Length: 96
Image (cartoon, rainbow, N blue to C red; front, side, top):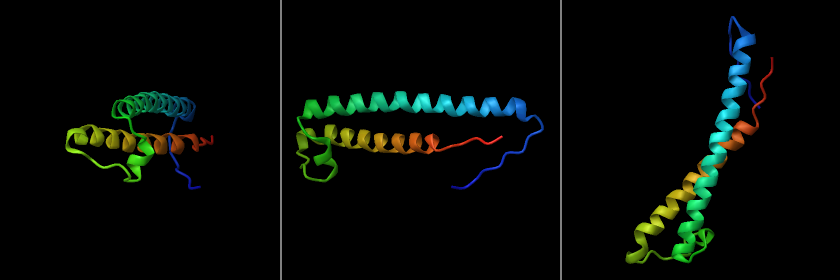
């Protein structure tokens, strides 16, 4: 792990603000994950496909479903990105 150093003249005030900001961001990411997962489930059900098969390029893109499949692929990418961000925040330790 690497360290990031923050210099401040008032650590008693800054420390709670930093902790609160990190926790707030975790909540936002968790809510975003839930919405994204719900949208993925909705699209997968509508298209009657397994998202894992789509990610592994095992599903063809017929013209009539192409836009919906692209939307699902986009949502899956967003899900991956949100999970990475949340995981990064979970490993932060603030030392005072």
